[in-house]
Length: 215
Image 1 (cartoon, rainbow, N blue to C red):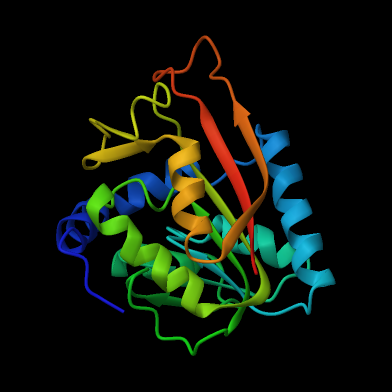
Image 2: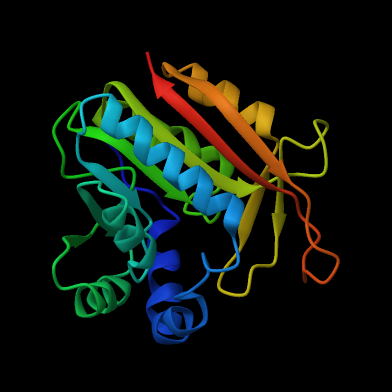
């Protein structure tokens, strides 16, 4: 476990916009049938392989954590922003939410049957991402599942690319590179989807959903 040097700035930035963010994205899954299907498949896989607890890491105001709970998972949320966690607890009082770092989780080795990391790696500088993936591998039980979502770089010649996110600097990844980093930690890719942007989307980035299983 380690502390990320990028964490204080990310925490401060999201604390400042938490209420606006929660209002803008609380129904973001409504118009995302493919992602809902992937979350459903993820839930089915976790339930079939022991039905362990699932950490929604980088949960924001908790709406996706609640969606996972509605799919029958024993889901809880972790986020770097205490303000986001406060909003999540207010909106979903029956669920557990904790402020914390994805690189230093207050969990025992092998404690989780599943991890959802939905756009939560994007603000971690590439040099610090391996520390986060080490922690994912530590807390995930053997046979456990990881669903990781992120924006793709422009091609394999770009392992990572930074961009001007509305909240704070963010990074896109080459899917093959991130899959290789996971594989080096025993988190073997089992499926991947790459979705093209809609013509009206502000940023013309492809979206990657990568499913992996701990060996």
